[in-house]
Length: 289
Image (cartoon, rainbow, N blue to C red; front, top):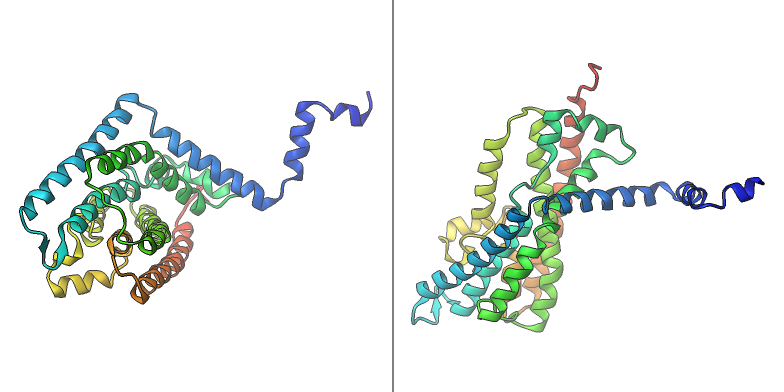
């Protein structure tokens, strides 16, 4: 058998394909594999999966009922239309489920077990791998979120966007908001390099993120001084900005300004994460060295 014939089997073709792939392609494959693994881990327990779906639907129904009762017979409160407020509140529940899943950072567990050492030694840096696992965790929430979204549309809890342009602009705004949430989650997770127990810090961060992002109460209904402070923080760029764009009936230059602010926060947080990551890796000890 010749050399050419020896490499003609499936194993030989697979080896040839792997050898022909470039570094960036292998990195993309690794990140996609991490996303898929983290997403599949969300479905390890069937009961938990169904509980999450039912729970998300119930949240949509309850939020719809509560906000409708708050408005009562009034069409507007503090200048905010009832339909816009209810739609915002329901979508806030869904975006929170995607942006802040229950286990939104697996780095702490890998630090405790020492598995982070293997991540650092792999060709793909541990930082993008950690971000990929966060993305996978959010992907695992999609069945619950999509089911609740359909329930919200059917029951009328979610209204169409304020305008066609608002609906179009809300898509990149949601993606930017999700990116900001990923970077901030990752930044908090890096605290594990200094202290292995960050459960309390995560709980405080999650509570602060849900309140400051406008997921629980829209910034429209907050005191002017508090709303001004929260608007200047990256939390509001996660949820309040994309949802306020969605319900906006008169988009304009202020819409582009909101998108530009989100882009700015992505750049700033990416730089901060890179700097903190470099400091964190210096504290890592592998095999005593």
